[in-house]
Length: 222
Length: 222
DNA sequence: CAAGGCTTAATTGTCGACAATATAGTCATT
DNA sequence: AATGACTATATTGTCGACAATTAAGCCTTG
Image (cartoon, rainbow over all chains, first blue to last red; front, top):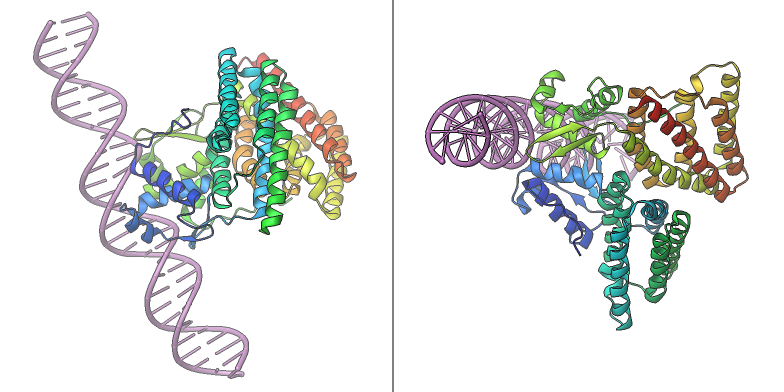
């Protein structure tokens, strides 16, 4: 499972990735201020490096900057999560549609293999599925769209934010077996080269997840 | 018609906006290299400012950077334009759906007024419609979605790229009266608070535009 | 006591210089 | 003559210092 192939070369790259990790994990808490001087001493790099890293974090929508004031980590709100899932439904639906058109037969076969592996894991009752498995599944379909813009928006922009919500709001809910069936049907549609159905099923799949999260948010009263 | 309210405050802001304008208009030609030292003398600012501006241009997908090598303006390809319109169909479709749910009655009334103004303009045969009018129409619906992520991706990210294609490939095609009817039906669906129809109509509308562009691309043999 | 302006401290924005890396050209070698 | 290593040059990456702006605290004043 080779997820991202983003290889940091410059010092700003490493700092960016490190900061992103710390923000996603909540080591740097949501809503907190990012002081450039403080971070530069903490991460042992110059302020220029920190500034570049913060700029990239802003591109990911993980921080917000105001001129002459500074940068803050985004706040996590239930509303924001719902908005995120609306965008996700739209884009991943299109990704599934395009994947049904553009994935190679070999890639589809690999996707089926992945699903079978998941099935074994789900049977044994491990929670592996929800964690990396789900991400991997969606990730492959996104790449399968072969649309560089789509890929960039989702992978570079939205996914880290979703992970941030997942980690910090502790979302590893149930929905395992049902989600598995949904995945299976999506892959079937892609295998049948049925773009419309693939899109519909993917959108529903994400809607279900969104609804599941929404009720969870209500009970947690966020 | 107050389009963007992005007010440049810092020097990097102004340089970014200026550079973006020059890239969109082709003053800085597509595919060309962006030399930091050259630009810093040309725009009479320090390299740090240029670097920050280039970073933001990268966020807009207007330039691409490689570590230790530099930044280049993106190349315009027919394939890229089609990919862009796929993303646009997806996101603006969702925007129309959300607009039907979230726009206030007053905003919808304003949208109707805008359409009537356009009707007058189209009747007189001016080309105004395709230029700013079309942009304004879509822009209002995007804002009407009330989804900040959606708005950010489209307004900050995708629209400038589309404008770049429009300007540099000279796309001001026909499709005026038909597009007007399509706009009318979309607004009707929004007025009726019919999210599903609004999305379908918006997606078709963009598909038509995409197809129109595609045939144009073939004849222009890009 | 509240409101407004001033001063001061801290933070961000900008700059020029230096270090590290990549590209192009040259020279030697097979 | 072609290939490879090496050098030189130019470009990007990084740094520390200075300038500009903001926010806070204090003081003054109505």
